[in-house]
Image 1 (cartoon, rainbow, N blue to C red):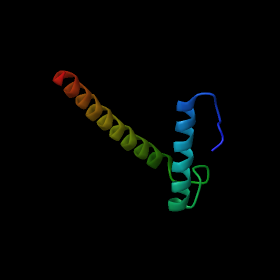
Image 2 (spheres, rainbow, N blue to C red):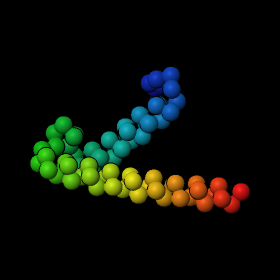
Image 3 (cartoon, rainbow, N blue to C red):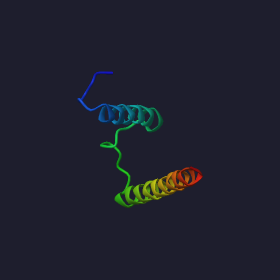
Amino acid sequence: MIKLTNDPIINDVLKLHIKRHKKGMKQFKKTITNNTKPMLEWIKDAREEAMDFVVYLTKIEKELKKAKNKK
């Protein structure tokens, strides 16, 4: 893939976004722009994603604290 920025972390994030977009296109057959689901469904989806994100962060935090306490 082409180097899009001079920041390797940003480039990695962009690559992940493109990969996820391609997977979504295969699954849903339309872009976000062309998705016409109701706004309340977008809010519901975003809320669920945010809740999952908090769960993942909490898991990581507990694992890091546990590893730190073992030292």
